[in-house]
Length: 503
Image (cartoon, rainbow, N blue to C red; front, side, top):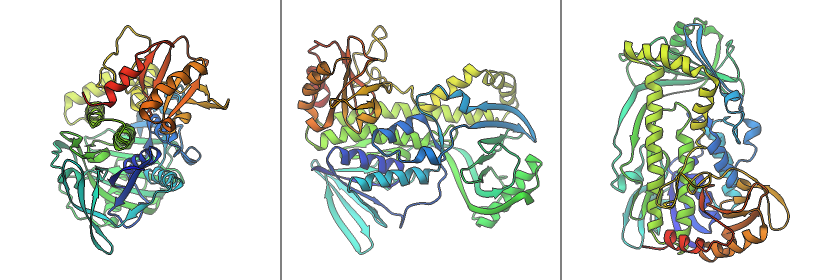
């Protein structure tokens, strides 16, 4: 096993990163300050990109059976629906569906996969301090039996918006508050709404939404009046939320039954000034937080984990210089900035705080959003399948005049054949590895050997696909094209030397 990594935080990002690193033969220790796994969660959406990430590391499990994908979004004023977005129809052409599933269930699937790989999570363990030098990070851990001081080669903070790792690394987290307070409840109720959808009210500048949950319950978000005091009990939160729901929906709160969960939180937009400080890195909510609009937070965190996982795996194994880790920040931080801007804009449009913004929403934005082609485009962007690293540090040769998909783009999930003749799809065959894909398996295997000499023989798979033409592609473990060239091209080895070794 190669160098050790301490991961702080056993949420989706931390768990996915741990799986990636174990698949790359890295010694991992993953800790979480909580005493046990969470059974409740705010995140409900798993976008197409998140589904692919889980599939590529064998962690999708039976989530598709326990999720819903035919979703419809309704935007109301009082009891009247002003806009309906049929997400299920809009994303039907996407290669992977969008799932409505609790973050707690996603975490459970990732824990199962990590357990299959022989790794465990240390619950009730908190990072108290961290100091780094050129060779190591010394971490002070508060464990149930006392205090430990351990040395690790790398430390990654996946410990959420209030990240201790980010604080200890001295990384700033600038941003603004979008919504002062949100009250949320999960409740069993007999409401006449679409059991495969959600309703958002737009009749004031304050948020109110209801989302159908798997299992017959409903999730209600409500933004309270500014004069409502803090420190509310769960019963008080439930009373306020149901009262606001009754007032704006016109339905009787008596139809609500058991309140399963009640909580309060704030929505911020924040982006870390950088994702790496020496041997300490951050990912997921520790690096960026945003509005829940569009379900982007969890999915962006899973993408962070996948991008960092294969890079840190190579560096920890001594097969790449540390400059490869700089590309993690260079590729992922600009993406997070775009996501933050998009989700903030969505809140401003759908819940306008000024008369002119309401006019723009009602007479320009909403008519456009009724067009099926516009809906398809919106959900394609939300799916994160259009994410590209073109012109980034690992794809400098990208050109608008080259064949698509180009270097840095996501590679479509092709039907493929492995060396033993077995049928698979590209993303399933990756399994945390690199892939060389060509029409001819002999050609693919020849280039596989060149790649394997740099990254390890067990980290590369050769695939043939009838969808390939005269050229071949090298697909990174995160599903993006690293290199593309002709069967006789000799440029693969120089490209690998360029990205894997110090300049």
